[in-house]
Length: 398
Image (cartoon, rainbow, N blue to C red):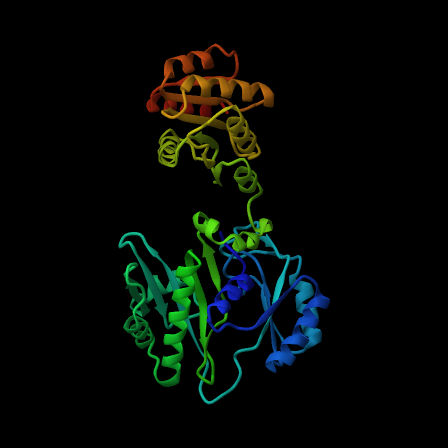
């Protein structure tokens, strides 16, 4: 589950990670009041107005502005709130900004120059370890750094049994070229950050940039935090951090129906029971000349209700020209699924796209007979190659 920058910073702060102070607001008037509070609390005279959306690259898209006084805070908050912010991660449609974060200026003058770093923690599935990634090239997209300057990325793998060891935090700080007070501060920062990552059951922390201030403090200027959905039962308070405005409406509707759905850009909708079979079905669609329009796993207990919900979600995508239903009847019988398909089809009515139903497993032949004798625009298949051929045929007619 993705959360906003201000929410991620609140979590980090609760674990002793130093962050750039800020107050989230919804209106220009609230923005001015937040700036006044920050001035009283931190003494800052400049303010950063930051759009709060679930996407990176906000600054390049015009979603991060510096204000030098309260009137500029009002003006810039007014311009950003309600804008359709387009970044390299949002796609051309962009995302509407509903909140902005008013943050303190942390690039103040001092005995040394401020310096930005990159730091992230995530799971390396290949090594079954968490990995800390750090770079001196903070503020840049890590993909660009990896492509053009791979030697500037420091990696440290953490044994999940024994956890982060002090020498490893020091090794990362040394790798960033830090020394003196800044080195000590970075070691504390990394240690607190790793503890927060583990104890919140997160799947990724990305702090870009981590700032060494002019007086050698280390703090998080940004915070991209991704919480593991599967562990939310252990953190019930985090469920309230979900922002439905940032999610695809179809994915929200699917989750409410107990379906695992991810929208894609293709022309063939697919409905499958089981994630592995769903991936294989998407491959079959591509091999047959189509492009998958979604990933949709209805689970092992597919019935008329789940099939109907799946139909309704897939049909809301105007790019869908055909639907492939691929069910393995292990837990559920194929004839029951076939009856569910027919029942759902009749209940929805006026389905204009052809539907291919591939049933394999318990009572597969009975299921195919039910489909074939339904009189509906539904075609049955038993083998995957038959389903692929059907998809190819129907795509030629649309």
